[in-house]
Image (cartoon, rainbow, N blue to C red; front, side, top):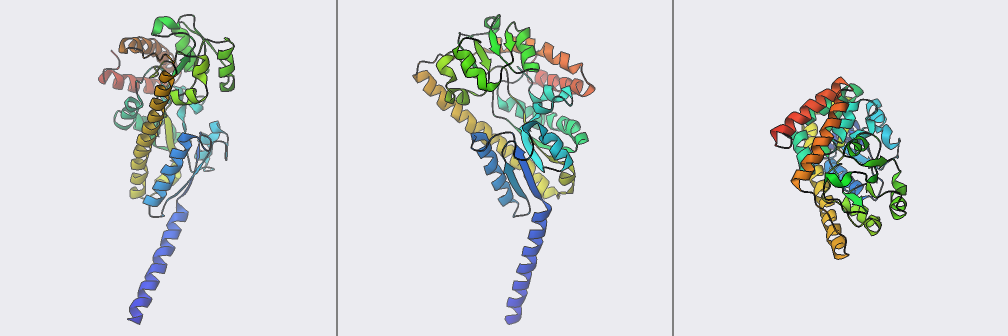
Length: 338
């Protein structure tokens, strides 16, 4: 009996040592593009803790808020160089490296819900294309999530494309500005910190800003009481990528765990943020805010205008053309384009 107890103790010690060694091999430090305390970051932290637990201690993920190690738009290089193990961030932040990242990172006007985009990524060739784009930079694309369709804040009623003509609005530089300008609006580039004041002082009439619940919490609807919801224009792709060398060194079961977990992260994030939006919508309506929901016909008109701008970006690099061809083929197959 004494020999048996000794054997059990020795086996336990050996097992614990082996587990510790494996955990040290896969210590994944990831940086988010969201600040600490933000609802999205909290969801990402919970995801990291669940994955670490599900791995039996073999994979430890430490989730860091924006700018913890490098600036929000530098995580791509940091992950490729091994300074960070991975990141959860908007793909569009690295559009300066290749226009393809701008087009796939925020295909303005393309999607009617985050699930349309996630189906493209998971089942329509998007995941393979993202790895084709990211692998040369030393990153492996694990999967995608999304904060959902961004709402649109406006001081004046907007019921369709015709109402955009002459509209002075805030929009970030790049594809978003190009599409709205093509639709007849007059976009101006303003930092997010100036949106509320600019609306309040009537410097602008409308703004592309963020999701409905965040707009509502920031008081945007007090000065711009004609939001468009659900949104019709912008929905950034949020990528979960890790260092490719680390990914290649992982056993298949941990790779599978990460891929499955990102699918669950996407469900958590889209569902929880959508619920917050619906709560904010109910509160806004109760306070007399008039919410405008564009018809499918008007959304299709805006998408057709946007598609011409996608073509312009497609002509800027071979990779951007691949993205354009892949996206439009998928959307046509799903009845989103004609």
